[in-house]
Structure formats: C-alpha cells, structure tokens
Amino acid sequence: MQDVVNRGRHSLAAGMTADARDYAIDPGVAAMWRVALHTLSAQSAPILLCAFGGVAGVYILAQLINTALTFDVYFRAGGVYPAYSNTYYAQLLIQAGIGTFTIALARGAITWLTLRHAAGERAGLREALRAAARRLPSLLLSTLVYGLLIFLGLAGVTLLLRQMRLDVTSIGRVTTDFDSITHLMAARVVNGFLPDPGAPFAEVVSFARYFLRRSTSNYYWLYTFRADADGIPARVLLIGLAGIVPMIAAGTFIRLRFATIMAADAPNRFGALTEAMRSGARNFTTLLKHGALLWLAGSGLNIVFVAVPLSLSQYLLVPALSQRLNALWPYPASAFLFMLSQTLVSMLLIAFTTVYDAHLYAALARTHREGSR
Image 1 (cartoon, one colour):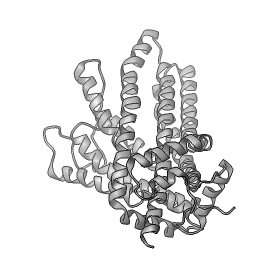
Image 2 (cartoon, rainbow, N blue to C red):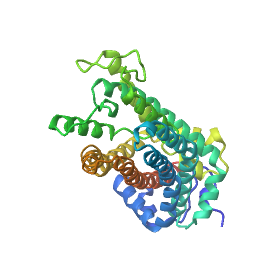
Image 3 (cartoon, helix red, strand yellow):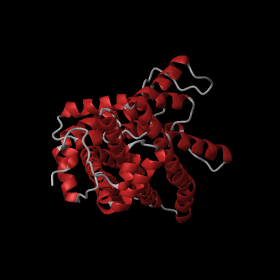
C-alpha cells in the first residue's frame, strides 16, 4: 500500500496510532517524549541499525584506521607523537568524506520509519533506506545548510569562549592540582552545551581546534583578536553573542527538514528546504520550546556520562597508567575506547532526536490541517 505520508507534503494517515492521537491536538513535551520513546521501543532494531551504520560506523572505522596507523608507527619507531598529526588528519578526512552522506541517509531512513509508525503502519529497514536514497540530494542540501549555520555560530561563540579561557582549545598542560582540574571541567562542561554541526563541518571544527591547541601564536578564527583573560572587548562579546543567532535559526526554522523531505512525494532540493523553513517560521515558538528542552537534556546527559568521566580518565588515569607501565601505547588504545563510548552515546542521542522531530512534524502537520478546516 502506498504510504500515506506520500499523499502530499503535509498529509498523514487518517487512522493513527493511539499515541499519535494523543499528541495530534496539542504537541506537548510530555506527549512527544512518550511517543518518541514508544517508537524507539517498537522500531528499535531498524532505527538502531540505521543509527549505527550511518553515525557510529563511520567514526569507528575512522578511529580504527587512526589507531592501526598509530600502533604501526609505535612498533616501528617506539613512539606515537611523530605520526599523531598525520593519522588524525586521515581520520578527519574519512569522517568528513563518508559521514556527510551516511548521516544524511541514516537520519532520512529513521524519519521515514517514524512517520510510518505515527501513521499506524510498519516499514522495513530496506524500504526506509530506499526512500531516503531517493531523497538523498535534498537530505544532503538540508544537512549542509544546517551544518553551515551551526558552524558560523560556533565560530563566534568559540572566539568569546577563548577570550574567557573556557574553550577546549584553552586547555593547556593539565596537572593533577585542584585549579587545573577545575578549569578542565569548566571548559568541558561549557563546551558540552555547544551543538554539533555534523559532517563535514564538525571535522572542520575539530581540525581548527587541534591547530589552535598546538599553535603558540594564538591565531584563531579571527586572528586579529588576541586572547586576553583580563577583559572581554566589546566587539568580541558582540561577535560571540551574535553567534547564537544562526544556532537558534538552525534549531527552529529548519528543524523539521528531514520530516518535511521524507513526507513529500518527490521533493526537489530547494522546494523541500523552503517548505521546512515555512513550517519552522509558522511554528517558531513551539519548535524553540521543544528544541531547547531537547538540547538541554541531550547536553546534560552527554556532559554527565561522557565529557566529565572521559576527561578525568584522559588527563588522570591514562597518564598514570602510561607512567606506571613506562610505555606510550595506553594513549592510542584509550583514544579508541574513549571514541567508542562517546560515539555510541551520540548515536543514541541522534536517533532519539530524529524520532522526536519526526513525531513533532506529524503532530504539527495534523494540527495545522485540523485548524484549516
């Protein structure tokens, strides 16, 4: 049977699941969380397979290659530092080159599965991937537009955070004294609230941060500004605050981009993105509320269960172990383990957010249709 989400840009099934009827009139936060978790439970296998293949798989592959190259240098030369930059650059290139496509495809497939579930139907993984592949150009365009907006926002915010010594690139040599660990945790917590632009822009940000941490000349983003902890120049403060604007725009005006694309019959690259922007403008307040709560919840979980534990392990446990063993191999080994745990948590958060946004789109579309009668 032809999927009901393909009967127009905003058409949904007349017969919806019980959960879908609950949120159709008022897309409240509690109802949206409930139906999103229900969909994740009911469609856990295909959704998690999509998320793993499209999100986690790429980063694991890139880190495996990095680790293998690093160990090769270690066993041949007895050190890891001489080749660290080259192997890290190779990792970033793999993540950017492959991840740009796989993440867009995976999120499109997860959205398709969610919209079908909201309509009271089931869809298989193969069907979802085919539907996403047919819309891949539109998915890629929307992904790049979103990533560019977040990237521009990060440029301004990073400038301000570096001025305040709260950016991750401000972390120098970490010792075990209280002040050093406190500064480390403060920077990690603050940066944990920064949104991820996704591939390929996330890799550009990682490359820039890596370069900044190694640079001794403080050339960063807008290099004419010099880092100074004694005060924040007005222009730096304005640039930092202005960086929040494109982040809010990305999280509201084009938040429903995947659902809009996957619910359309045959979306063109610009038409679907324009439609998503119109929907975002029409529901700006609702999307801002839901997006802000998701952002706070996801950032909080990532900070508590990933950023803080991994930072403490990275700067305290691993150096102590390496010193005790009188060897450097714990560094590349721990880097892979850290990446694996962080990637799996990010994978689950991306899957949940994608499901949540698809249900939110379904609720708003039905509410709009009911109100226009």
